[in-house]
Length: 364
Image (cartoon, rainbow, N blue to C red; front, side):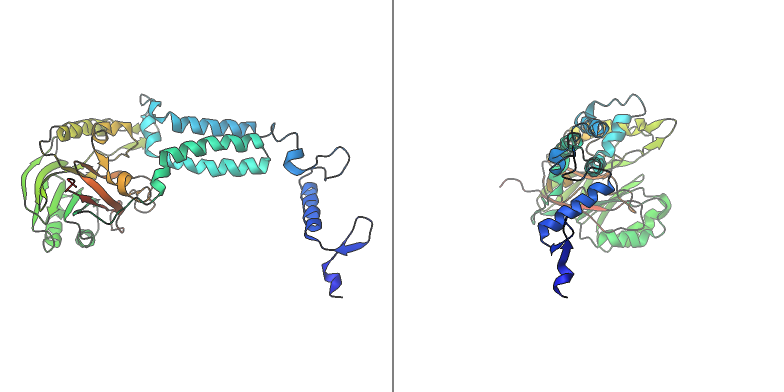
């Protein structure tokens, strides 16, 4: 009786013990019948699975074309024109997310049993890994002699005091805040006073420091009101020029596309100010409303390094806080070596705060 529990019916009506190869063949034949394909051994039918199917190269042509188009978009993203709705910048802002289409195409290729589609999917996979594969590894180190942080606190933040305490607890020696409404500035000043002895506010941005500051001034980014500032911070390793900026927001509108003209103008002005900086060591903290892939920020990104790209782990997405999809908050440096970069826990803002450790003494 126990033996019968493992017996299977043979083709001639007899029974045989359930050898694994026999069970696998019967399962494959059942799958073929369910998918309306001739079973192995039936007259004129295919043999040997995919290798014996003459249609595997003819099926899935549409999927293959889609895979090639996906690869092309990622390869030539910098050449997609901005003349129509800033389509190029919009694509570059969410460029990493195009990788989600790769596993979808892969699964569809398997369902269609298309060798052509599966081979075509390899191309966008290779392109995506070439563009973003380096961000998947952890490049952070344990060094660094200065910790900095930045946070767009949101003008409508319901609890600015709690937000201030949260970011101050990170241990950053320099803390930049953006989107500071006039009514909330005293709240932030009071909450941050126990941690930071020095601070300055210019318009809607501010810088809090554990080290003395001088040369504080607003930076004109062609807005008509102040959303950027600069200060010299006297760190133990010497003076550092620190810029805090909040570039204009961008919008995606059905009738106008990705509207970013004012943001682009301000980015050019900020880039000019940083290029004219006389100090060798420069740190930029702020909400740039754009990613490192966005060509419209070239005036800034071409002369500075992203701490996340150089010493972070993962993409470091910072917005929106509820489901981060893009890193539009940035910490960038020049004449300074990034050691580590990360996002901080969520506050009551719609952005995540971000932080980095940098090495100011680069002589060794």
